[in-house]
Length: 282
Image (cartoon, rainbow, N blue to C red; front, top):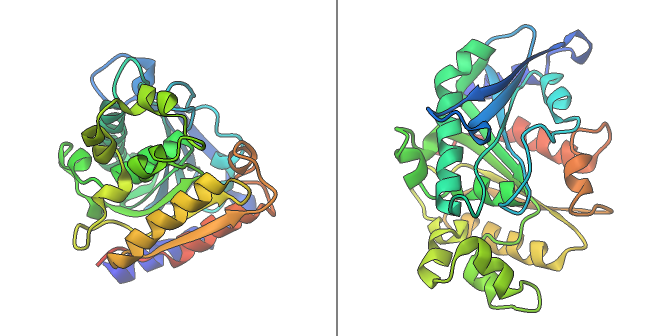
């Protein structure tokens, strides 16, 4: 299987960019609900089979945002031979962050089940997200309970790329009130230490679970995301899970997201390098 996945990455990066045109399928329901918040969009090259899949989770502070705010990402990834999936999910206060993460797992299950319809390979899904979406990406890729509830496992995910978030370890973040106002955090994550632990990706890191490799991106000038990114990566590496942290120079929390996919963008180059070199967990 390792050899096969390596070939898939090679194929993705040898498709001529000029030959690619996107196919777009929008507002696909990934659950039985009729809510627009439980739909996703799929962008895929016009031709190709068994292509790796990038699954994108938008940000918005766990309270807003939309799957359509993807800027140039779909074109950037489909030009390189990837299927790009962008998902919606429900928000606080309508649902808890735990239920929100369950929405992500349901969307991943739909992507897994329908991958071949869009030229994708269900065995090569990489999960990415920005801000709140980065937290949700990291949580669904470390706490196996969400995917297990959908009949999947962490081994079904081949990589994770969270982009600029500071709550990989919520209790640690909450302990510094100068950086993270407790009132704002409690509005999102609740009022109990048990909840903070449950919703902290770092708390779920352990060897032998099938946690995929991580590329953790953060804005170089944001000390809180830098600290949390390195703390999280250190825990992953200590458990034998490949994890690398990259600081994005000259970016803001907004531009690290909106400029992702642009030609010459360094965080984008780091992502493509990660995708080329990623190996499935053993």
